Image 1: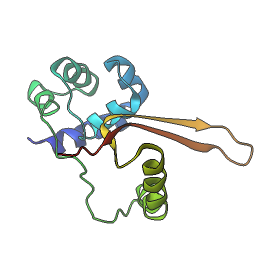
Image 2: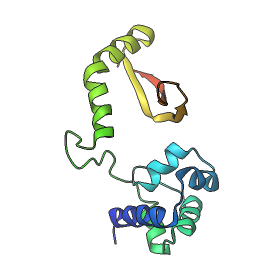
Image 3: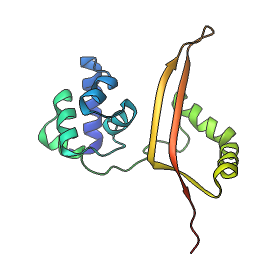
Length: 147
């Protein structure tokens, strides 16, 4: 048993039972974005959260323990993503990354946007020309310190 096998079981159960990430998030009491990342192996659940997820997905106690292990983050199978949706994000960063960096530095100074003290919100935005995906990323600014 390993974390990948637990993730695969979660995905399989989600599909066969028709479970929605929003429903899992409501039971856990956190955002759908964070809970989805945890269920996909990118975040660590505490024991109580793992038990809730375990109940929803029929996980054993051992499998629930794997949800509590700090994962290896950023686990895309290839350097350049091949999934079209993920590739679009890769493309966005390639095209707009230097612009985002420049504008953040101009506004905040030399530093980075945290992906630890971070939140994300993904919502459908109705549009007569075709619904849009509205993604808001919010990370704490962390200035580089002098020493």
